[in-house]
Amino acid sequence: METILKMINRMLLYNSGGGIGDALQALPLINALKNEFKNANFFYLCAHENHFNLSLKDLNCHIETLNLDIKYFGFRWWHLLILKKKIKKYKIEKFDLIIDLQSKIRNSLILKMIPHKLFVSSCFNFKFSKPSLNIKKKNKIYDNILQAVNSILNVNCNLIDYDINSIENKFTTESEKLLPKNNYIGLSITQGNVYRKKEWPLNNIVNLCNKLKQCNKTPVFFVEKKNKELKNKIQELIPYSLFPEHESNLSSPALVACLGKRLDFVITIDNGIMHMLSLSKVPMISLFGPTDSEKFAPVYEKSIILDSKKIHNTKNISSITVEDVLSAAKQFLNY
Image (cartoon, rainbow, N blue to C red; front, side, top):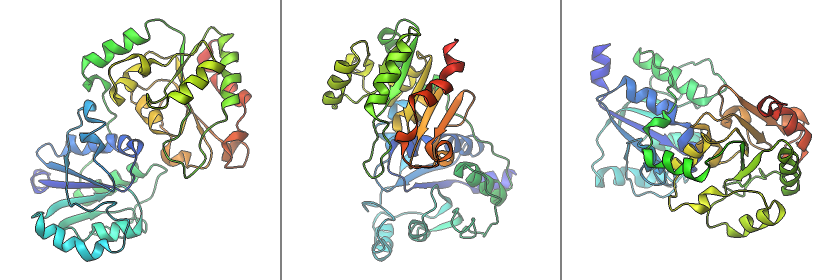
């Protein structure tokens, strides 16, 4: 065991997913690897930017960026033609272990050109790994990846949830100031990308909030400060709604995570806010339509998933009714 731990000095994690949610989903795996390989240097490569050193920096998940100066790394076949020159230019040393956090064959092929000793990729049921593996897959990709790492290195890592107490205290203090009372219900209704329709109809949101008001619940919306048009529209339709982020000088996913601790429960679509709030383990009802709930939905105690594909046999998230959501919320409403 000691020999293996000493052997892993440089580790590279590649995430072809570009969103904050993709980065947050990887946190339990990153925590597990850092806990096992305490003396290793960790590097992060992604198709867009290293959120851990930018928008997620307040979560204090320190991981270096591997800079290859290749935009959308792995998403263009011609990256195969320039990667060797980039490796030489930036003097990239061999990695002891490279882990591909996604499962796109083109990206994994390009990634595999970076010098390495060991390689983990879920492509072709992990047969693309080095050495080749045959992993019995579970629903969550990070469970599968950790199983592969355990197999290759003969270790016994377990996923480790993010500790919200790692966040600087000023964000907790601010969240308590913004939401000082009880009976708050969080709502996140906007999607990050526009490629798939993941948003639940606004008229459903209005009807839901009016019904929740009868239970003395105050709706708390998570809407970006730049999206003032939507904020004003919601306030016009739901005058008693709150927008805590718009009342604060702080702007950070760390604040969103801490605000999660002030809520009775959350109703959210599949987006980055969902993953930020899940860091607090707040009771959650997540609504899914075209995206894969088994892959993306947070799973923990008091996390309820409403997937239109399973409930109504359609990818249309609008098929999820207000009654569906209220029925799921009964255990959180105490009535």
